[in-house]
Length: 74
Image (cartoon, rainbow, N blue to C red; front, side):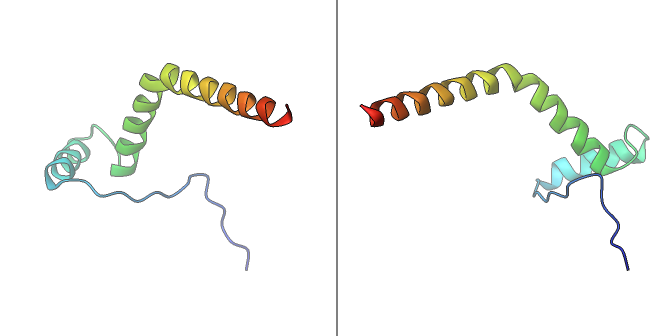
């Protein structure tokens, strides 16, 4: 039997009871269709808000690796 391939990755997290109840309320009142949708949107907003900082950190990391690599060949 062929397995069904998911289009989404599964993650697990633990949150405070307060956060859980607020998300439950948002779903109950139709702000989000599911808790998963609410979490996915919140994470996307977090990623978007921090994108520039992430790019800067990645660039700095690449520079550091290149400096180490160059120093090793000397």
